Image 1 (spheres, rainbow, N blue to C red):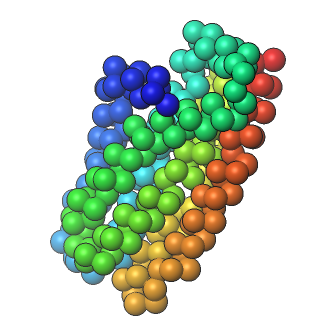
Image 2 (cartoon, rainbow, N blue to C red):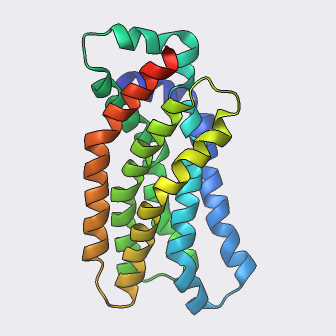
Length: 214
C-alpha cells in the first residue's frame, strides 16, 4: 500500500483527472435540467452514483498496468506473501487515491441538487460502503484484461453488469431516506456486498493475474 500510495502522489495528475471527471459530470446535470429543486433532488442519488462508477472505471486501467509493464507483478508472484493479500493491499491503495476523494467530494456536489442534510449523510455512508466494493470488483476485471489490446473497453463490458447491484442499493438508500422509508435495509445490503467482495475478489483477482501472466 505504501509503495502504491507513493507512486500515486508522484502521478497526481492521474488522481486529479478522475476527480475532475466526477465533478464535471455531476455539475452538468443541474446546468442542463434547470433550477427545479424537486426534480434535482429526485435525480441526485442516481446522478452522483453513476458519475462515481464512471469515474472509478477511469482509474481501473492504472491498477495493474504499470506493474505489468515493469515486471513488478512477476516479482509479486515470487513473493513469500500470498498474492491475494498483496492484491488486497493494491486495491485498498487504489481506493484511497481514486475512490476516497470522490466520497469526500460527493456531499459538496450534492448541495447543487438541493439535498437535505439527512440525504447528504446517507449519500456519504452509501459511498463509503459502495466505492470499496466497486474497486474490488473492478480489480477482477482489470486483472482479466491485463495486457489485452483494447482492454479498457473490455473491462467496462465485464464489470458494468456487476456494478448494477451496488448502484441500485447505493442510490436506493438515499431515495429511501429522503422519502422517509429508512435507508437501513439498503445500507445493510451494501455492507453485505462489500463483505462478499472483500472475501472473494482478492482471491479471484490473484487467479486472474496468474492467468494473464501465463
